[in-house]
Image (cartoon, rainbow, N blue to C red; front, side, top):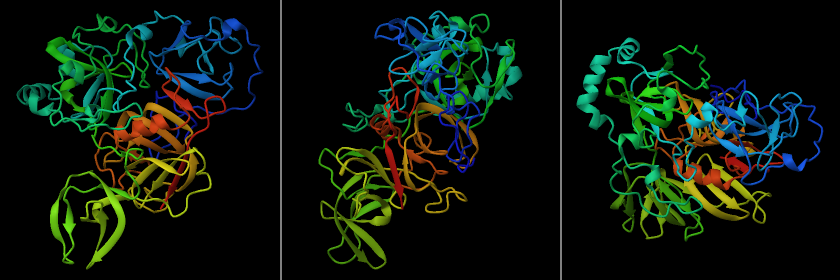
Length: 524
């Protein structure tokens, strides 16, 4: 994918939005000319807390700045989500169902992608919302073997028809399920404060999670009403099939999926439902829980310079004899307060930790205060500073650093972003934010689909800040141009930046009505 090609202004989450070298989605949000005339404010059109609601019945329901399809889109609701609306439509024009004003701003057309009928099958069926309090907002899994995307529950015979070598697979799964489905301590196991800062260590052992919870269930293994006797909800996937279809394409190995439900079907086989209401057998999935790595809250004792261990074989050294004598091992990703002093022993450059020991600078990602702050670093203005050479991200409020962490930028370092997998450099602004969205990725050496990547913030063409639950190599260049963060850090940054995400929305566009985007300053 090519980051040189510009993205549309805001993806609707239904299609694969551009990855870090991405092309725009044909259904992305586009600012068009000829805005609608200002509508007189009938009190019945103004939404009030506790009022009636409108819901998304397609994968995404766009929110327009004005009650007119030619008006810019400023956000969207995810399928199954609802938002408070006015009692009466504000206008009809090109929307037969009427444009309803929603909180806190904008209008949704009650036609095709949205409905005011709260008994609509999609609104009754897709009730699981992303948990915005968690670094991993859904239960996630990676595909361990090519898997079918079933459109409806498949009979045992149909499973054998559509899945190659299924007999052998099920035999192996029965024997190795415990090993195959074993989970590790994950991002959601780390306690967080109200700002999203980690406030404690992750547990030493992963929680004992039942399959129900691992795969997005609500505690009931029965086939849900909307899949009993066939499929009773419309297709909201971008992969179009006739209503009588059994399968809707296949999911490639290593693809990442977010899950919103699970049940046991024919043949006592468990199935998980993805966010677009398709089904995948869980024997083909591996639960993914995300890295526990996170940055540091600089309002609580940390100062620049500081560092994060970025290799697994790092040590601290005693250099009193002008030699490298190991003084203890450093755990991977450990944050270290530095003094600002450095030295060389032979060809090795070292930096001093606050406890008086020394660390090879090649073993750590180092966060330092710039020798000169940019002109926009004034008062309490929020801005993000990213160093490609250091692989460090720092959140600033004016001149004060408030959070620091290690990231993974483009794998080709300071190369030309137009010709290599390098991160673009310059000063930008966050233009759009998505709780989750689909990205096409080559980031781990294979081309595969990453559905519902968490905490995505686009700032220039196809370049974004986002969580990367598929790796743990923060502090090293490795992406195809985007800035990869751990799930904990990605959520922390997402919740801090502007524009803020309105309640019930899945994505928001920076605009006059939603707020200006936070500055992103990327430099060597």
